[in-house]
Image 1 (cartoon, rainbow, N blue to C red):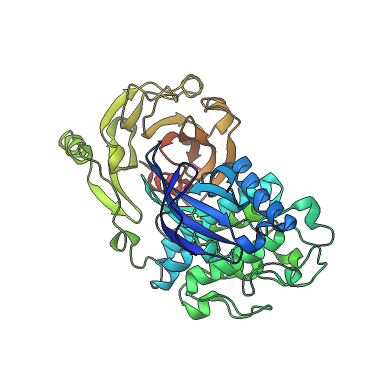
Image 2: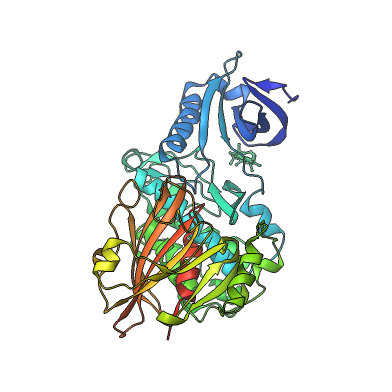
Length: 454
Ligand SMILES: Nc1ncnc2c1ncn2[C@@H]1O[C@H](COP(=O)(O)OP(=O)(O)OP(=O)(O)O)[C@@H](O)[C@H]1O
């Protein structure tokens, strides 16, 4: 296909690739000065109503879900010759398939990617949609201020959960699709996507997709030294009997996250040796040197993000903070009213802007931590509505920390987390607030794992 000059106001730069139904182009939005990816339905399909309907349905689902973990659709239109096109976020770092082909991924990175893919599929399941074609080439990567972000793409086979429980034509990609998907008329539910998540997990960890079902070779036999819980989780997701799989993407993802946070995860090549992070921004390191000179502790590298350890002697508290956020700090920052009422003293704030901390309408990224007596429930410590929309709740249950956290993945253009965690059996709680430019639950988990109370 020859390269067109433009689609509407979008100037075409080059072809990104073609799939069975469409071609995707990199284009420039000259008005907003931003690159976009434009997917155009192929000419031979453009006049088939069912294919056109599916194409628009994909665009609608992506528009309605509007999630950090899914490719976003900004617009749709029709070319003069009748071919519809959708304008999407440009994923500038290729796909997870490309990444796997480059060589074995460090385990921590494989699990980080898996968690983010699981988050994307969870958003779809919550929306009432089954993806039906999860595979590494349909998971794209985009650079973000905190590293690399996963964008689940290609919902060309997606189906609403209600429709999928009736008659469904066979669809998916062999090697990744569940046994029930290969049976025409098979009655599907979200557990088909759980099977595909298991297949993607298998490939992320071993470098190769699983055999056809039933899968009998555990990933640990190909890559020795994996935590047994990871082998069990992946094999259970790949069960032929869907009753034996995790119930949905969220259950699967929560288990991956718990395994990633457990202290016995073998450490292999740190991923920061393979990928350069776009930070630190100018000024951040100077600020950290300032902190060190004031008696706070050393900085260290942690896979994925450069973290600095900051100690608050008054509260015998140590927190790891992304170095790029360590521009300003306070050791006397007032807790929010709910935490203060629960007995929190002044806390430690390390952030890009201390004055803006309590106003989530104004960007400021960093970590706030303070100690609260006893082991109060999160409800008694955190404010219920620092951000619009209700929070997503998740439990923390690791050898070092127990408790819960509330997350607002989309809080006025950033993400906000409030957590109340305490060491098992210890009546002292750490109340934390984390504000990020992009929602990265793996970073939240790292920060919590790095907290120490003396
Ligand atoms: N938003 C995007 N940003 C960057 N590249 C993209 C984007 N969307 C798709 N691509 C790339 O364009 C190519 C075609 O994508 P498309 O989704 O049409 O098909 P596919 O997934 O390769 O194949 P099929 O639809 O047959 O499974 C792929 O190489 C894909 O990685």
